[in-house]
Length: 421
Image 1 (spheres, helix red, strand yellow):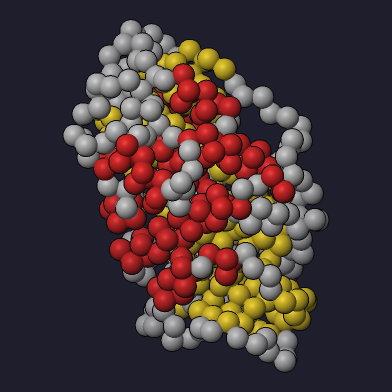
Image 2 (cartoon, helix red, strand yellow; image 1 turned 180 degrees about the horizontal axis):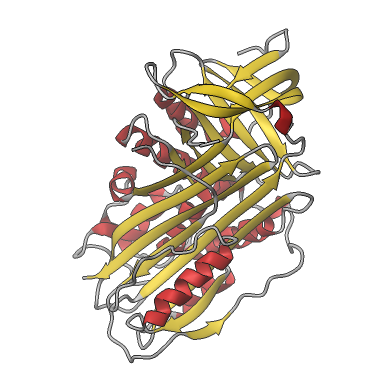
């Protein structure tokens, strides 16, 4: 069955076990939220943004290969932020592997933390005028379980994490985690976790939420019934939106792309990348994974018309195989992983499960998007001369990008728009 969707973003990391005293949920602190960013785009570490974009697009390519012909939609930022936070608690070969896979090799934990402090702060204050971006994190620590102060402080100060001490055996803890998730994702994810492990040592949640109004909305009166070719032999009915005018447009070898901006100041945009007929999406995804800047480089302003379906997609995946294939292996090994920069050992901590959920909703007015990642850890060519016509009636790739930082917030392949009208 094809997966459907709507949008928001969040990442969760859970680590266990660990013995400790019992109790309820104790809120420790909440990070301050300044009214405006203390940083400018010049403070952003471009190598960290490139690493996040590259890691996310490479992972998306691997998932497309694992599940050909199915929708794939990830948040490179949510995945990278959650795994980078965990990587700052990894040591030895485990830390080296995680940093290499994330494109952060050579960076210290302090450098990683400083980079995300700037990026998260800027993104969380880069909206306005029709664009809302929210990036939030939280740490849920087992009561009585010791954690290294440097790791907790970095999570709070650099990744902006709210820190709470809890008893995972108390049913109120699950309720508190899900309520935090719902609040951080604008009410779009109401039940992130069906349960928590009573002997868990740590959960880390990172939420990315996006809500953007088109700079130039589609005219709802122009939306008409259409068909979308989910494969060479199958079509599904869709509501096809259309708009004409000047767009940022590119015609490249094997594909064409257009950017649809959000907000009055165009703080973000959606990149629609349509492979040429006969070119498989897998071939296009490989190009984007090898060079994510194809999504962020400058396009030429050209007159034309775009037709695209309304979207309503949901996606979830188990990422362990894809992450192992990306080079993160020791972190999954019970007897070989090293997270001694996170908590005293023994017991040894290792990642046992990684899941990711995303949702995307696109209509005439704009876009709402979000993603959720759960990590569980256990102990032990030249432009055309004529106006272009881009009809998105077959599988394509879509990405939501923050204009100023070039950070890819969401990206994936759409094989079935999933809109019921």
